[in-house]
Image (cartoon, one colour):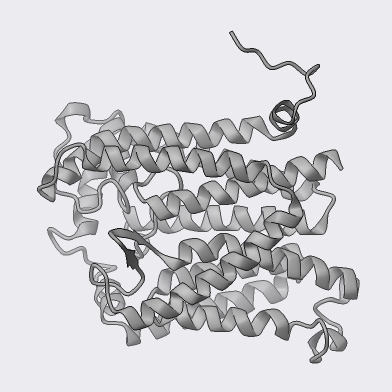
Amino acid sequence: MIRITHGETSKLTSWFFGIDRSLLYMVFALMVLGGIMAISAGSAEASRLAKPWYNFIARFLLFDFIGIIVLIVTSMLNKKTIKVLGIIGLIVGVGCLIFTLKSGAVNGSSRWINIHGIQFMPTDILKPAFIIVGAWFLAKMREIYGDKMFSSIEAWKPNNFCWEIFLIPFAICLYLILKQPDLGTTILFVAMSGVLAFVAGLSLKVVIPLFLSLILSLGVYGFYSFAHVHSRGSQMFSVAPRTQVWYSLNSIRHGGLFGSGDESYVKDVLPESANDFVFSSIAEDFGALAACGLIFFLFLVLQRLFKHAALAKDEFVVYAVAGAGALFCGQICFNLMTALHILINKGMTLPFVSYGGGSLLSFCFVFGMVLALVREDTWD
């Protein structure tokens, strides 16, 4: 039996005892739950789509395996390498966004890129890239301007390092995402920016009205500009029978407190039961108590992220880990609020639990980055 002890000094042992193993185990636990739902909801979804019953299970296990490799390898990197990967990801992500606007729709949406049968969304590349580049920029701004990084006139004047360097490319990215159209991800990026601005020292008296007004403006614009947003928004107060949300709510009701187990039948006809509405499938199979337990567990993961952000010594690590927490929290909120009909369907996965290769790999990279940065910050 192989046993790793503190006395060993190899790179592997230094990595193992240096990272936050509790956070790593939490991620593994979520991925195991995702595998269970790929078997349960995935087989039902495959049957509904006239595919082999193991279709989603096999693909999920493949992406799980790749994701674990991405998670572990990323967690072994240093800050410099992570920054380089962030810049590369930003360039590649923006290039892919432009390509989606010219390549036409895939599965009814221009959010996807299809290369030899492999589909992915450029925003899954942009999410971790935005966190890294945004954190690096904020850390540099604080280094140059200190506590006056938001209020100094010099910080807003065009010079070698000013706000325009970040805000102009960021606005271009938002425009490209909105053009796909992907209103949900656009709002998610704005919300993440608000969290980063607050962590960087911008007063809540400014953050709340500024970013909330931006989000509301985007919502109003989307409602009157995009037919699918208008249609879904018009049904917020009256759920039409046999729609995705109607099946989702009935799936949750059917599960009761303790779940219906093998008697589950609503998820068999619920579209995206292994992806966008996986929470509804969990509630039906295992009950409301288990679903609430999952929410509490996700909260513990989020609490651990923000704890690391609060205790970090390096400003870059503070902003990067806080950004990871904002992304994790934002995507959870979008997914759960959609399943519970608090928000219109925006097609976002539940991190590590929903079926979705690109999203899973993106979050594996984000959490690997967190583990790497926290390890390096702790032992510096």
